[in-house]
Image 1 (tube, rainbow, N blue to C red):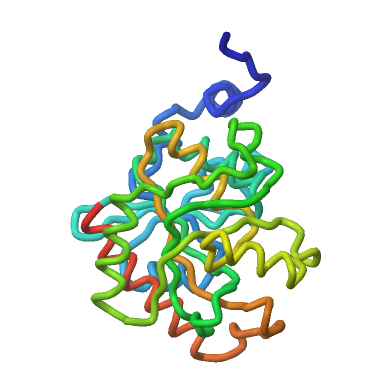
Image 2 (spheres, rainbow, N blue to C red; image 1 turned 30 degrees about the vertical axis):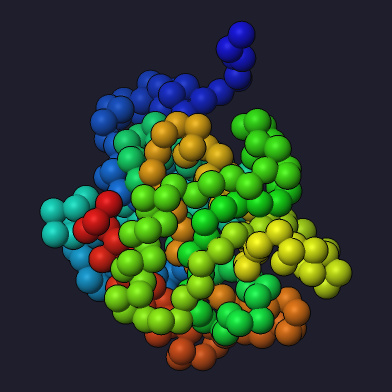
Length: 258
């Protein structure tokens, strides 16, 4: 039996249109979507592409706390969004994006390397999403599940990344939401499951929702922290912005192939 939930993206847009007299098509987004938490990456795209800023759902929705940017690159229409970090807000944003027209969703952000072969600011292309988070369980994902990342997108990411740099790694990603509760003994166990990186659970949620709705998706991470080596602040150095610009160049090539 289908469950009847209290609210959905469809309900949300319906209420907004009734309250504001806006039309539903005003909330449509371009079909290729990049989710990022980096203002540097947004600055890169704004410098490369003519982009239009739009409040989208921001005035009406607690999780849509930033505007979106719409643009076109070689006849490929894209949307860039910088939502709040975390599995819970990402679940809402991803559902809204899909309802409003997203056909391909790329997550472009940083992660924590747990493979000692991965150097600071190396790129990481995840193939699976593992680990616990407090949100994907509501989409029927088991905490021990190795959720598969869309292979078509993974292969495009690999091909386009290796065109630009050899500093990239391919492997599984593990989720852990409690940043200060990561133990070295736990990392050693996680390594044995084939994981080379970790993040806050956004990938678990993205993968689970997109797989269930048949939406293509993938992720391109860069390593900004290795918990086995200790904390650092790479974004204070110029090399960090260089890394983000390189990530942007890779994504521009990926956009042409998806």
